[in-house]
Length: 236
Image 1 (tube, rainbow, N blue to C red):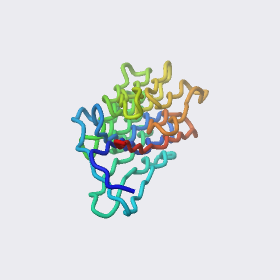
Image 2 (image 1 turned 30 degrees about the horizontal axis):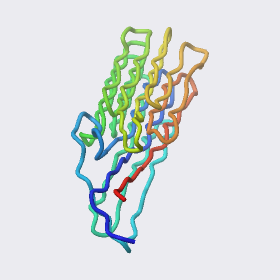
Image 3 (image 1 turned 60 degrees about the vertical axis):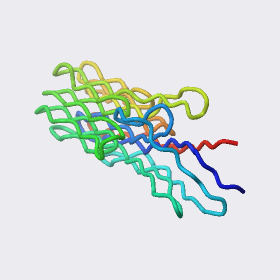
Image 4 (image 1 turned 90 degrees about the vertical axis):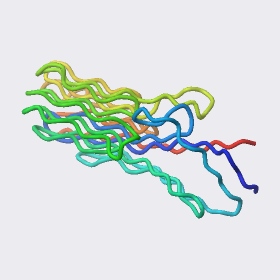
Protein backbone atom coordinates (compact mmCIF):
# COMPACT_ATOMS: atom_id res chain seq x y z
CA UNK A 1 0.00 0.00 0.00
CA UNK A 2 3.04 2.30 -0.04
CA UNK A 3 6.23 2.68 -2.01
CA UNK A 4 9.16 0.84 -0.46
CA UNK A 5 12.84 1.76 -0.61
CA UNK A 6 15.94 -0.01 0.70
CA UNK A 7 14.45 -3.43 0.03
CA UNK A 8 16.76 -6.42 0.54
CA UNK A 9 16.60 -9.65 -1.43
CA UNK A 10 18.10 -13.10 -1.64
CA UNK A 11 17.71 -14.97 -4.94
CA UNK A 12 19.02 -18.54 -5.18
CA UNK A 13 18.54 -20.60 -8.34
CA UNK A 14 17.98 -24.35 -8.53
CA UNK A 15 20.93 -26.71 -8.16
CA UNK A 16 22.29 -28.82 -11.01
CA UNK A 17 21.40 -32.47 -11.53
CA UNK A 18 23.55 -35.56 -12.11
CA UNK A 19 23.25 -38.64 -14.30
CA UNK A 20 25.35 -41.55 -15.55
CA UNK A 21 28.47 -43.46 -14.60
CA UNK A 22 31.05 -41.84 -12.31
CA UNK A 23 29.17 -38.56 -12.26
CA UNK A 24 30.53 -35.32 -10.91
CA UNK A 25 28.50 -33.43 -8.33
CA UNK A 26 25.93 -30.92 -9.45
CA UNK A 27 26.80 -27.24 -9.12
CA UNK A 28 24.81 -25.07 -6.73
CA UNK A 29 22.35 -22.53 -8.04
CA UNK A 30 23.64 -19.00 -8.47
CA UNK A 31 23.20 -16.77 -5.40
CA UNK A 32 22.64 -13.03 -5.47
CA UNK A 33 21.99 -11.05 -2.30
CA UNK A 34 21.99 -7.55 -0.86
CA UNK A 35 22.79 -8.93 2.61
CA UNK A 36 26.23 -10.11 3.83
CA UNK A 37 27.65 -11.20 0.46
CA UNK A 38 26.76 -12.50 -2.97
CA UNK A 39 27.99 -15.66 -4.68
CA UNK A 40 31.50 -16.07 -6.06
CA UNK A 41 33.10 -13.80 -3.48
CA UNK A 42 31.32 -10.65 -4.60
CA UNK A 43 30.16 -7.72 -2.49
CA UNK A 44 26.47 -7.39 -1.57
CA UNK A 45 24.33 -6.09 -4.41
CA UNK A 46 22.40 -2.82 -4.38
CA UNK A 47 19.06 -2.68 -2.63
CA UNK A 48 15.92 -2.11 -4.70
CA UNK A 49 12.70 -0.09 -4.55
CA UNK A 50 9.21 -1.54 -4.96
CA UNK A 51 6.20 0.60 -5.88
CA UNK A 52 2.65 0.35 -4.66
CA UNK A 53 0.17 -0.89 -7.27
CA UNK A 54 2.83 -2.68 -9.32
CA UNK A 55 2.75 -6.41 -9.96
CA UNK A 56 6.06 -8.19 -9.43
CA UNK A 57 6.77 -11.68 -10.66
CA UNK A 58 8.80 -14.05 -8.50
CA UNK A 59 10.22 -17.14 -10.23
CA UNK A 60 11.83 -19.92 -8.21
CA UNK A 61 13.99 -22.34 -10.19
CA UNK A 62 13.47 -26.08 -9.92
CA UNK A 63 16.42 -28.35 -9.25
CA UNK A 64 17.88 -29.91 -12.37
CA UNK A 65 17.10 -33.57 -13.01
CA UNK A 66 19.71 -35.91 -14.47
CA UNK A 67 21.99 -34.16 -16.94
CA UNK A 68 20.04 -30.88 -16.78
CA UNK A 69 21.04 -27.63 -15.16
CA UNK A 70 18.91 -26.11 -12.43
CA UNK A 71 16.26 -23.54 -13.27
CA UNK A 72 16.81 -19.80 -12.95
CA UNK A 73 15.25 -17.77 -10.13
CA UNK A 74 14.30 -14.11 -10.60
CA UNK A 75 12.39 -11.00 -9.58
CA UNK A 76 10.85 -8.85 -12.32
CA UNK A 77 8.28 -6.11 -12.69
CA UNK A 78 7.60 -2.70 -14.20
CA UNK A 79 10.29 -0.17 -13.33
CA UNK A 80 12.62 -2.87 -11.98
CA UNK A 81 15.53 -4.30 -13.93
CA UNK A 82 14.98 -8.05 -13.81
CA UNK A 83 17.33 -9.68 -11.30
CA UNK A 84 18.20 -13.26 -12.24
CA UNK A 85 20.24 -15.96 -10.55
CA UNK A 86 21.39 -18.69 -12.94
CA UNK A 87 20.73 -22.40 -12.36
CA UNK A 88 23.59 -24.62 -11.26
CA UNK A 89 25.48 -26.69 -13.82
CA UNK A 90 24.87 -30.44 -14.07
CA UNK A 91 27.71 -32.78 -13.14
CA UNK A 92 29.63 -34.45 -15.95
CA UNK A 93 29.39 -38.20 -16.51
CA UNK A 94 32.25 -40.57 -17.45
CA UNK A 95 35.02 -38.56 -19.20
CA UNK A 96 32.67 -35.56 -19.64
CA UNK A 97 33.25 -32.05 -18.33
CA UNK A 98 30.81 -30.49 -15.91
CA UNK A 99 28.24 -28.04 -17.22
CA UNK A 100 28.66 -24.31 -16.75
CA UNK A 101 26.07 -22.62 -14.54
CA UNK A 102 25.57 -20.34 -11.54
CA UNK A 103 28.13 -22.68 -10.03
CA UNK A 104 29.78 -25.23 -12.30
CA UNK A 105 29.14 -28.98 -12.18
CA UNK A 106 31.96 -31.34 -11.24
CA UNK A 107 33.91 -33.18 -13.93
CA UNK A 108 33.13 -36.88 -14.32
CA UNK A 109 35.44 -39.77 -13.51
CA UNK A 110 37.87 -41.17 -16.13
CA UNK A 111 40.32 -39.15 -18.23
CA UNK A 112 40.29 -36.33 -15.65
CA UNK A 113 37.72 -34.01 -17.25
CA UNK A 114 37.46 -30.47 -15.92
CA UNK A 115 34.70 -29.00 -13.83
CA UNK A 116 32.25 -26.49 -15.27
CA UNK A 117 32.76 -22.76 -14.92
CA UNK A 118 30.68 -20.26 -12.96
CA UNK A 119 28.90 -18.46 -15.78
CA UNK A 120 27.97 -15.68 -15.58
CA UNK A 121 30.56 -14.75 -12.97
CA UNK A 122 29.63 -13.28 -9.62
CA UNK A 123 27.02 -15.85 -8.56
CA UNK A 124 29.02 -18.94 -7.62
CA UNK A 125 32.17 -20.96 -8.18
CA UNK A 126 33.65 -23.52 -10.56
CA UNK A 127 33.28 -27.29 -10.26
CA UNK A 128 36.20 -29.56 -9.40
CA UNK A 129 38.03 -31.81 -11.87
CA UNK A 130 37.57 -35.55 -12.13
CA UNK A 131 40.39 -38.10 -11.97
CA UNK A 132 41.10 -41.42 -13.66
CA UNK A 133 38.20 -43.03 -11.78
CA UNK A 134 36.55 -40.63 -9.34
CA UNK A 135 34.61 -37.45 -10.08
CA UNK A 136 34.91 -33.84 -8.94
CA UNK A 137 32.57 -31.98 -6.63
CA UNK A 138 30.15 -29.34 -7.86
CA UNK A 139 30.91 -25.71 -7.17
CA UNK A 140 29.15 -23.80 -4.41
CA UNK A 141 28.22 -20.15 -3.92
CA UNK A 142 31.00 -19.79 -1.37
CA UNK A 143 33.80 -21.87 -2.91
CA UNK A 144 34.92 -24.10 -5.75
CA UNK A 145 34.16 -27.80 -5.87
CA UNK A 146 37.03 -30.03 -4.82
CA UNK A 147 38.84 -31.93 -7.54
CA UNK A 148 38.98 -35.68 -6.92
CA UNK A 149 41.90 -35.91 -4.45
CA UNK A 150 42.98 -39.38 -5.63
CA UNK A 151 41.99 -41.71 -8.45
CA UNK A 152 39.42 -43.45 -6.22
CA UNK A 153 38.07 -40.69 -3.94
CA UNK A 154 35.38 -38.26 -5.08
CA UNK A 155 35.71 -34.52 -4.57
CA UNK A 156 33.58 -32.70 -2.02
CA UNK A 157 31.09 -30.08 -3.10
CA UNK A 158 32.03 -26.42 -2.79
CA UNK A 159 31.06 -24.38 0.25
CA UNK A 160 27.74 -22.63 0.43
CA UNK A 161 27.28 -19.04 1.53
CA UNK A 162 25.86 -17.79 4.84
CA UNK A 163 23.18 -15.10 4.50
CA UNK A 164 21.30 -13.57 7.45
CA UNK A 165 18.34 -12.05 5.60
CA UNK A 166 15.85 -13.89 7.86
CA UNK A 167 17.50 -12.59 11.04
CA UNK A 168 19.66 -15.65 11.66
CA UNK A 169 22.49 -16.89 9.49
CA UNK A 170 21.47 -19.64 7.04
CA UNK A 171 23.85 -21.30 4.59
CA UNK A 172 22.57 -21.73 1.02
CA UNK A 173 23.82 -23.08 -2.31
CA UNK A 174 26.38 -25.78 -1.54
CA UNK A 175 27.77 -28.04 -4.26
CA UNK A 176 27.10 -31.77 -4.61
CA UNK A 177 29.79 -34.38 -3.94
CA UNK A 178 31.32 -36.43 -6.74
CA UNK A 179 31.28 -40.21 -7.23
CA UNK A 180 34.18 -42.18 -5.73
CA UNK A 181 35.07 -45.83 -6.02
CA UNK A 182 36.52 -46.05 -2.50
CA UNK A 183 35.03 -42.92 -0.95
CA UNK A 184 32.37 -40.55 -2.20
CA UNK A 185 32.52 -36.79 -2.06
CA UNK A 186 30.32 -34.99 0.46
CA UNK A 187 27.75 -32.35 -0.38
CA UNK A 188 27.70 -29.12 1.62
CA UNK A 189 24.98 -26.59 2.50
CA UNK A 190 22.14 -28.47 0.84
CA UNK A 191 24.28 -30.29 -1.73
CA UNK A 192 23.83 -34.06 -2.05
CA UNK A 193 26.45 -36.70 -1.29
CA UNK A 194 28.01 -38.68 -4.12
CA UNK A 195 27.68 -42.46 -4.41
CA UNK A 196 30.41 -44.96 -3.61
CA UNK A 197 31.66 -48.09 -5.38
CA UNK A 198 29.59 -50.26 -7.68
CA UNK A 199 26.62 -50.73 -5.35
CA UNK A 200 25.11 -47.36 -6.26
CA UNK A 201 24.76 -46.39 -2.63
CA UNK A 202 24.88 -43.16 -0.66
CA UNK A 203 23.97 -40.78 -3.48
CA UNK A 204 21.50 -38.11 -2.36
CA UNK A 205 19.61 -35.28 -4.01
CA UNK A 206 20.12 -31.61 -3.30
CA UNK A 207 17.99 -30.20 -0.49
CA UNK A 208 14.86 -28.28 -1.48
CA UNK A 209 14.82 -24.49 -1.00
CA UNK A 210 18.61 -24.26 -0.75
CA UNK A 211 19.77 -24.46 -4.38
CA UNK A 212 22.14 -27.31 -3.46
CA UNK A 213 23.60 -29.47 -6.24
CA UNK A 214 22.81 -33.19 -6.55
CA UNK A 215 25.33 -35.84 -5.55
CA UNK A 216 27.08 -37.69 -8.37
CA UNK A 217 25.94 -41.29 -8.93
CA UNK A 218 27.10 -44.37 -10.81
CA UNK A 219 25.46 -46.76 -13.26
CA UNK A 220 21.88 -45.80 -14.00
CA UNK A 221 21.61 -43.45 -11.04
CA UNK A 222 20.46 -39.89 -11.55
CA UNK A 223 20.19 -37.10 -9.03
CA UNK A 224 18.01 -34.02 -8.64
CA UNK A 225 19.29 -30.66 -7.47
CA UNK A 226 17.58 -28.71 -4.73
CA UNK A 227 15.02 -26.07 -5.71
CA UNK A 228 15.96 -22.44 -5.20
CA UNK A 229 14.47 -19.77 -3.00
CA UNK A 230 13.60 -16.06 -3.15
CA UNK A 231 13.31 -13.92 0.00
CA UNK A 232 12.41 -10.23 0.10
CA UNK A 233 12.85 -8.11 3.24
CA UNK A 234 11.69 -4.54 3.54
CA UNK A 235 11.64 -1.93 6.33
CA UNK A 236 8.39 -1.33 8.23
